[in-house]
Image (tube, rainbow, N blue to C red):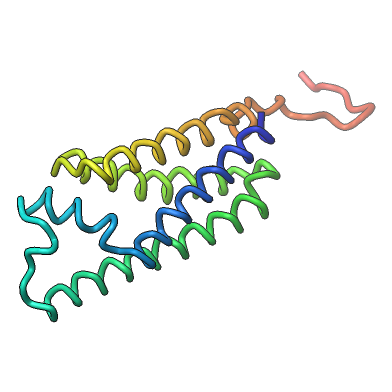
Amino acid sequence: MLKVAVVILVIMLAYGGVYSLMSIIVPKATMGSTFKARTGKALDSVQDADYLGVLVGIHRQLGLYALTTTISGFFVLFAAFRKAQKWAWWCFLVVGGIAWLWGMISAIVIGDKVNMPLQIIGMVIFLVGILIPIKVFFAKEASATKAPGATEEA
């Protein structure tokens, strides 16, 4: 199950990476629906070019943060998660949970019709990826292992 989970998490990270790159390369594609959901107005209605430039710059910066988080996720995945190290599972749970859950809840609350399904898809892939191998990471450890030839004392 761990190998399947690694493949699923690679897909999730690749998906997050593409989503991040969209925010960097074509920020208005994802930003426009959020702006419309929050203000009720189209992004093109912003008359002040400087104001629009600041909004686009901030959105690109958020995309860059998301991309660096995705790249870090690949390092954690291949350096520790695939070796079933518990800290890597917790790392994915906390970081991935915050990223996908926050984005999903935010998009649902404001009614962002473009980003909402994208966030929900990311969250579902993420949850499947970390829940499938949960027994590998948190299996009951064997009771105290005894050295060969050791006897139990009463």
